[in-house]
Length: 459
Ligand SMILES: Cc1cc2nc3c(=O)[nH]c(=O)nc-3n(C[C@H](O)[C@H](O)[C@H](O)COP(=O)(O)OP(=O)(O)OC[C@H]3O[C@@H](n4cnc5c(N)ncnc54)[C@H](O)[C@@H]3O)c2cc1C
Image 1 (cartoon, rainbow, N blue to C red):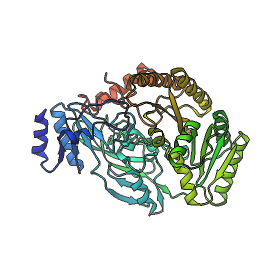
Image 2: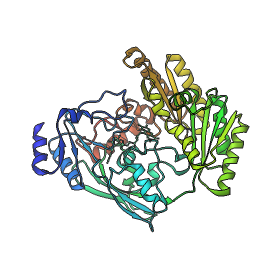
Image 3: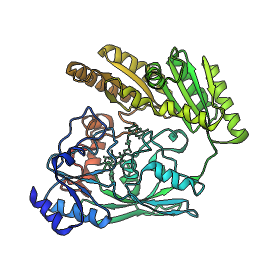
Image 4: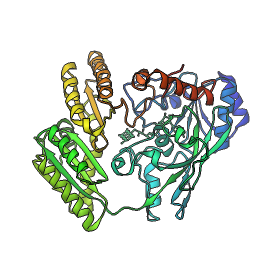
């Protein structure tokens, strides 16, 4: 094993290569804390595409697997350590290379933090839409790796919609460029789209060209409280069938409302069974009209109270209520955030299934998420160190996955199959589709060097 490290040191003497156990320990896990990953052999922190290419070439020659990693905020074990493997963290490749206003694209290295890109393009009057709730600390490389979603996908779509091109290091160290800046481009297979969401199993992204939009207007924001989850789901239906296109449509259940309120004392209505966060970024009278129509839809569905932000500071507070959801639940004990999604028309059934599953297994669960996308994050909480409760949560999660699939949905809407859900991919996609995925993997990475066993099970 030290052969590979010697070879890397010889060829790349300036590369930062962490081999101390304490350093490697901090790259062992991502945020899927229920998953027990392994300790990487070493961690490389390259600064250039040439370094990434050389690392992968040398690793491949020694048959040593490589785990690409961004900020490690993933929730599926996708960038967690593999024993004997090299973790390649792209965090030092963190420059915004260009903002091209005519073509409305930004060219960035993979370690750029999502929020930094948003801020930089905003200074040019532009907007980078993808906004996972982790946007203040996750990287663009990780967002592309997972095809990250977020709070405004209901209007602007997921990361995939924003990726025009990537530079990618393949499993043998070769570097290719896919896509381009043209609005239209249908030459050959779309390798760009193949890379998006592949969780570092087909290549390591070393540069990305991302689509920008004109900056939207300042959001107009409201919270609506409901006496039941069914009423909140009904409001979602009314908003979506009413021809509205809110830029945010998020849900929190009673358990999550209480967790956020206990933490920050925001005087939220703790008797409500659910709240919806609704935002419009149309601006001016159009935005006013959209929020008013959303309020009417919520009231028609039985909302008990509606709070509208009167200024940007208040709007930011209302948004923070939702952004704090996971961290608030995390304070209550060991925590496992799930990520199921169903067609919007089946939301009410999914919410009922979550309640049934929690009760059947005797586990505490707070549910929040991107309800406008049909994507919910039921989050199970149990006493740290209580293995019996952890086993009950595990069983509840398996039931949850199957419930989502049986409703025509998916076991993961945005966090990815990673390492934690890989055993169920065949059940969702079917044996034939799985075989196609495995053939694609083997065609691009015949020796299974890149993040083996993640995203798609090994054949
Ligand atoms: C509080 C909190 C809120 C979150 N909210 C959301 C949310 O709203 N929506 C959402 O989608 N996710 C959310 N996440 C999950 C996570 O932040 C996203 O999955 C994010 O995209 C991961 O980015 P990262 O830089 O941390 O990548 P990592 O976790 O380091 O990596 C994620 C995956 O991408 C691969 N990868 C990383 N960099 C590259 C690269 N350069 N080339 C190829 N593959 C690469 C890795 O191998 C891994 O499989 C949340 C997480 C937390 C902790």
